[in-house]
Image (cartoon, rainbow, N blue to C red; front, side, top):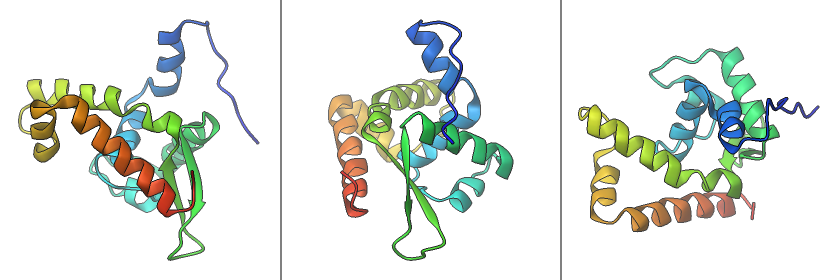
Length: 143
């Protein structure tokens, strides 16, 4: 059953906040985009220790909103993988800006190679990550 979020208003900021308005959504997106994580157990293994119930709820929201798709793992038929859709891949520049902002105020964290590529050429770094995520989808037979 597709559960849709009841919108409080038509404001675009409100729409975004209703989907991404908590830390778990952003951390799941971080893991999908920057950390190469795609499975439930990989998300659970993140250092922030998301609970199974919360992770299930957030993944279902991302599925219902069309930000991720769920596919059967080619290596294990009882395992599912979560891949960003085109709608999700469109969030790469936003997430990179959040990453950049956070690393400038918390310099100990963040993926240094990506941050360095962003400093050299932000647009190129965004395109490269988006292309990588798209090719990951194609690897699993999703266009």
